[in-house]
Image (tube, rainbow, N blue to C red; front, side, top):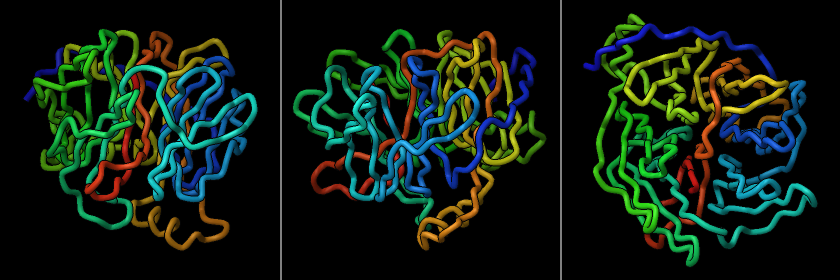
Length: 326
C-alpha cells in the first residue's frame, strides 16, 4: 500500500448548473468561456455560460457521449449507438460525418461491455485511430472497463483509469507511431479506503480524469462521492466531496478564477439505464454540474473525453468510450 506523505486539502464545490439527466464528458472552450457537455441519456449536447445557463447545441438521437475540440471552431461529437463521429462547426452550426484528423493520433477506449444497460463488466481494450488512413487498431488489451484517458505534459506518458479492476494504468507513448509500451498498474484505488474509513474490498473505481499543467491528475472516484487530485509523485493533494456519484471533470477558467467543473450523477445506474430505454417524457433530471475554485490549477492541453467510434472489422460494438488526441 502506498504511503501518503501529505494531508489532502479539502475543496468546496458550488452548484453551478442543473437540468441534465446523465451528464458526461465536459469540455472547456476557452475562446467563449463556455463549457460543452453531453447529456448521454437526454440525447442532447449543451453549452453552459458563466452564469450556469444551459443551451441546447444539438440533438443526438443515438446518444452522445464524448467530445473533442480539434481547434477553436471545430468540435468532434459522438453518436454512440450508431458508432459514428461527427464534426460540428461552431461558427455555422453545420455538422457532417467526421472524416480525417488534421494531425496526431487519437486514442479511444472500448469498454468491452454496456454496463449502463445491464451487461456485466468484462475486459475491454484501448484503440488508436491513424490520422491519415482512419484505420483503427488495438494498442492495449485486457483492461476491465477502460475509462478516463490523459497524456502528460511531456507527451511521452499516457494514463488510463480501469474502472472495474480498480487501478490506474500508465503507458510509455511513442509520439511518432502512437505505440504504447511499458504498461504499469501504478495505483490501486483501494489505497483510499483508510482515508474514507471504508472496507478495502472493491471500494471505488476511476471514472473520468483530467490533468493540470503540473501533471496532477484530477480523478472522478466512482462509488465514493469524491473527486481527488493525485500529484505526479503519487500523493493525494486535494479532495472534493460531492452529493452524488463523481462522474467526470475538466479544468477551465471563468470569471477570472480557475475552477474544476465536475459532473455529479444522483441516479443509480439502473435508474439511469431505465430512463434511457423507455425515453420517458419529463424524465427526472438526475445529474448536476458543480464548479470548484482551485486557484493554482491550470489545465493541461491534454484532456479527456468520452467518445464512440466505428469499430475495427470483426469486433463487438463499442460501449461507453473515452478519447484523447495529441
